[in-house]
Amino acid sequence: MLRRSTFLFALFLCLILQSHGAKAQVDWVKSGKDWLRLWKAGRIDLQDPSPRSGPLVLQVNDKRVQALVKAKGRYWFWSHANELSFICSGLAADVTGEGRKVLVQMAAQVAPTRPGKQLLNKKSLRMQPWMLRTQARKSLARLGDQDVRAYFSNILKTRAKQKVAEARLRILATQVLAECGDYGDVATLLPGLTDGDALLRAASARAVGRITGEPALEALIERLAKESDPSVRVHLWAGLVPATEALGTWKERRNKEIWKDLCAKARTILLAAGTPTSEKIALCRWLWRVRPDLLLPVLPKALGAAQGAGPGMQRLRWWLQGNLIDMIGSGFYRSRKGKAAADPGPTDAQAWQERLDAKARPVPMNRRHRLKHPPYPKESKKLFGLPLQGQRLLILLDVSAPFAGPLVPESSRRPKAGASKTKVDKEDRRTQLGEDIRRQLQEVLDGLPATTELRIVAYSKKRESLPRKGYLSLGKKGRSRIRAFLDKQTGAGDADPSSPLLDAIGQVQALPAALAPEEGPDAIYWLAISPPLAGPVRSSEALTDLCAASNSLWTVPLFIAWFPDRRSLARRKPLYQFGFEFSRNLTRLSEESMGAFENRSYSPGK
Image (cartoon, rainbow, N blue to C red; front, side, top):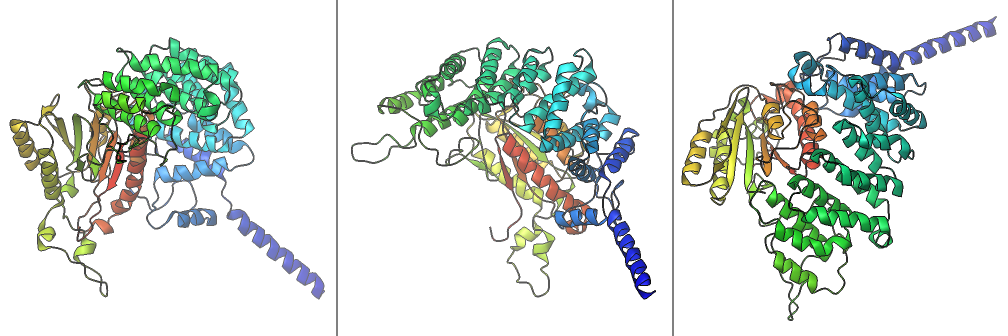
């Protein structure tokens, strides 16, 4: 009898443990379907950046959810976007295949049907379908298994091309296949290169570029000779980077006929007078990655032809000079005394030609640093640690409420008991953050040559620019106007960086954007203080995705200086934690635009 009671008690205990363990498992498929249903009903506002007390669909008491939250760290917070990230990761880990179907449903959402209307539709702005598609697409790409590839390959083969919704689904299928990596079925992706939709041709160019083998490279070269859309041609050069690297090292590919053919086309495009500056910069990015020695004799000639003063010309000269230094070697030319000569400047094409002629066999040298772009000149002037590049500059200045806050944060002004006291000048204690930004900005602008053209856009909830249209030359009259404009900014309201930023990169209505207009700037400098809390896009991740989506079309670098909120109660506000996520997104955006990021956190004594 005792044995029987002991057995029943053990069985009962096992059932309790099993039921407790079952509750600890998250039903990701059900959570994904519930989340998508609420999103379609308009109950989920992905625009809302405010921290929430808990998730909307997931169970806060679930052990798995608690473990994930703990792993995120102390500055992580609940929001609709963060919950979506949790659900997409869980759906990608689902082994039954049902999670994959829910991810496909999320990735195919379009509201409204045309992407060009998304920034003009209030419901679409609230739901942010591009963020939903991006999250789901990244999760599908992380899967990368044969079933995912077969599913999206079938979409490209069978779906009708006439319907707009089906066209968006085909673009999604091409993007997922591209992000999955080495996909061998080149015949599935090649028809997209000749499609009537420019967005699909651009996505197909990047997808075909990831396929290893000469057939993919031949298809891209053939399309490059026929493509007339400048924005798609930029995508083609971006797709040619991985396709060319798959041919092997420069010694292995130099004797191949397809390599010689590609170099011949690149030589013609680089020297042609009618080639847009944006395409030449995209071609220089290709040069920086593959380092073709066959094109080395052409670079001084291209540098000599790029001596104009038009928009983007200084940026193009910087790329050409960087490729010359990379392939010839810095300080290679030496005098008889053995002293290394300084590198010629970006305007001295004749000196570069002499350096090239001084070497018997010009071949690419080993790169000392793994950089995505050439290093900026050490002698270039700095704006808050950011190199000033170009003749025509656009400055986006955040003048929201933190602009009128203190220069020194509360943690430095009132150290905790027992902590070492930091020396802070009395003048810094009284100085506002906006005063310090104005003072340093004026000092840097006064040191620029008078030929520099400038435009400043000060934004909070409202926007004010100097001048209203075009750019202002930095003459004596222009400097006084800038000084008066900066002194007028006091700092109030919430920040709306999306309106001036999307306008600056030419992305007014569509996703992705058209090329930046020819009258656009050479570089954009964004002085950010507060995360987006107003305007059409109030999510830092969505704003970053919108700008990064047009990176390959947009050859203007974005330099970002981030000034965290330094008001007395900032550390006790939920938005202080939101600033950490905003800073990470700014870092990614500056890297993808070939710019730079500078975190201007206050450091006493500096």
